[in-house]
Length: 286
Image 1 (cartoon, rainbow, N blue to C red):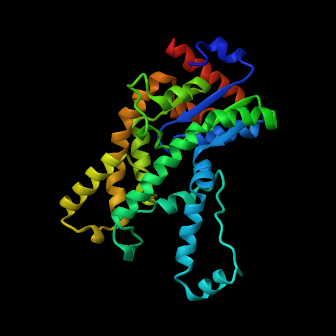
Image 2 (cartoon, one colour; image 1 turned 120 degrees about the vertical axis):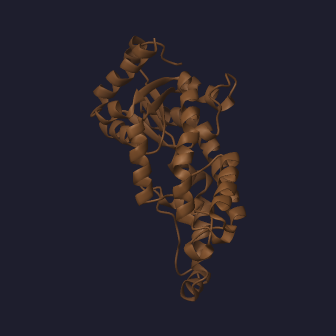
Image 3 (cartoon, rainbow, N blue to C red; image 1 turned 45 degrees about the vertical axis):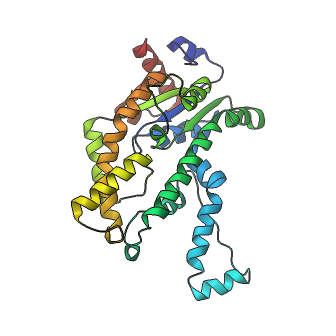
């Protein structure tokens, strides 16, 4: 770790952290709070994915849908209208919309092969965006003069790394430049996340092996064909299983840094309280 004690952390001229954990437990809340406090550069992995690595795919997908509408098609072909992605740190909908959901096309679903292709595109993009972290640390300091840096990761980071492998290339690269901070939820948090997801199911990324197993099991359990799957029903059915699949992967990553709880994060109101939070986590680890 780049900070081995609470004292090293408190005395560091440049503080660099990376947040990871289940979506909805406070990664972006902390990142926004630090950015707004001043002195912190906020690097959003999902924003980087949606602009640098998947921006063209997202816009082309929107254009493909527009081309199916004669009125919009004529305007596009005559360069009379422009279609772009209005992605922001707090509105990452273009990325999730592109990922989509598999199943019945009449209900907005994607053919499973196209869905797998988009999942693979996202995996490649997320890994590339994570490897860009050192570049943005240098850029934030050299170009903008920010002494401190926060990397706000997506919930799927655990799918692409192996926390039990001391030679994992991505974890080694990230831990050389940032203190990895795991935001750990409780069973009550997990239940609330499931309830929230059930009300508003959103696309998410899966490890290929997990997706294949879940898809086969869903078809078998519901006695349906691929193009008969209700897309929202499938991702609701999959969500709790995905959280259970990710939990041990997050825990394995925890040895690479420090752990804070979602309750501690919720109680953190300013940058000074965040400094105290990380110092306490380092003391616990020691």
